[in-house]
Image (cartoon, rainbow, N blue to C red; front, side, top):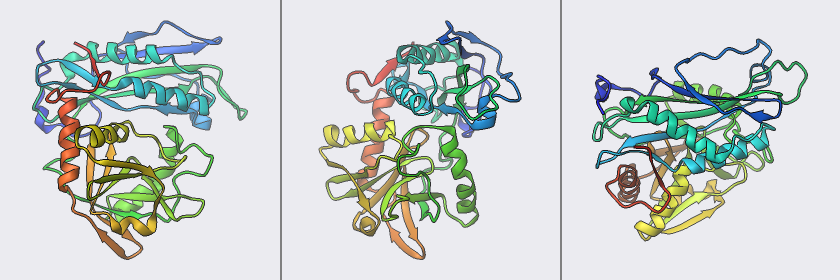
Length: 336
């Protein structure tokens, strides 16, 4: 299939309108059949629940062109599971997980010309999301919902190569105990916007949040989970208020089964972060972003940046995604 006439190497990490998107509506207690459409705008009431009370959740994943020319998506079934959990927590109707995966497949297939070619450094970002669409003025869940999927080609997250990040320990909280930190709700990200802008203005790349109950344990950043390396061991924080990253889950498997590392998911005390030699932020956008420095109120903890173990993790997982390495069963959804 002939690709769109795009300078793939010049793409940034931003929105580009593509040809088709998927839409399904929930009304009178049931989801309709759903369909692909070329309409990229959404018309809702000025009193729609999503506008009044932020009843919305979303997912993010990527589609790739593999080394052998196939278009694939990475573990969309786990995104379906996570959105289902988000919906339950936000009192939204679950969009069936099998239909979620099929909607992703249909949307990517309908925009196959927008999937960047292998070796370009670019990929097709896939954004499923759902929101309360009918007019709600009292504080309660919506009665009607819309589920949508759009895609957009994006360039590499780091232009000009990967540079170790400098992050700070945040004075503000990301999530409350027994709150919504473990689901991918839009409101979680709205709450972090003030803090990320302030971090950038102060010269930091990201905020590292600690647990809001005791402020003694590392949790995650505003948009990524955290991993630490010490010798032959990978350690990642465990907490009920951390969003379960699909990239992190995949990296833990890669670390143990492909690289022979010891893996620990456990509470990580703020006081021990200086004991590790490497640190990375993991998520869909960059897979792993190496951390060079964590600043804790003037105290600097330095790491190896893209150290040898972080590099191996990155190379192995991206090798699986791009078809250069064999994938565990069920990890790769072939689209065409």
